[in-house]
Length: 242
Image (cartoon, rainbow, N blue to C red; front, top):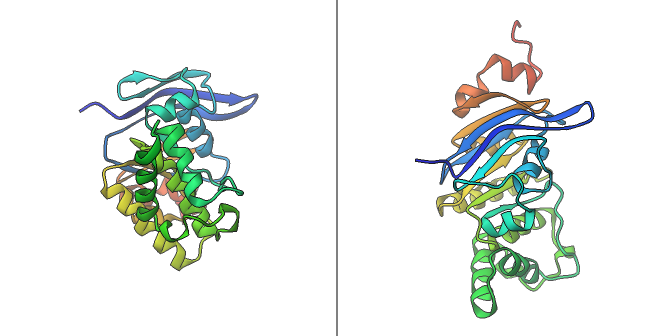
């Protein structure tokens, strides 16, 4: 079966700083894949390349068999690629419902009652329905993160990119968020998740990709990757000889 997303030989640098160094991987339809790496490894830059916020210096990004390397970010969203941001970026003066409606209208091209019904369903799925009429600027951190995901899901993505969505949450909040992400994935949405809260990531994903200085250094089943001496040294700071 062909990959939903294929990244091949991706390169991107800003002067001497390399954020993607010949990066290649495939994501199959229905997968949940985690991306690990230390701060500055190039994880968010990789998302920016996949979503079109950055243009690659070399390499190719293919989505559903179509080369999208030069496709605009807006067009990629309409094609089915949506994301959350590490720092929530809601429209603070708009309600929760209105924020999600932006995703349905601009991302999924929906209108009228169809868009409204879809948004209400997404808010229910993400635990925000009771807060639909609250201004986004008044939400707690957990609910702002839920709203990031809801707005992305309202665009009806085939591929959902989550960028450190569990960061800054309490243990109870993190558990609630994991349950929501599991439900989204169980519904058939393909997920790529960048996360430093490793136990949250491992509760959801079926495969891990580890990058460092923009280069993929490991890929495979979560247990195999977490037991890797190289990964422990680079990501966890553990000396493999100790």
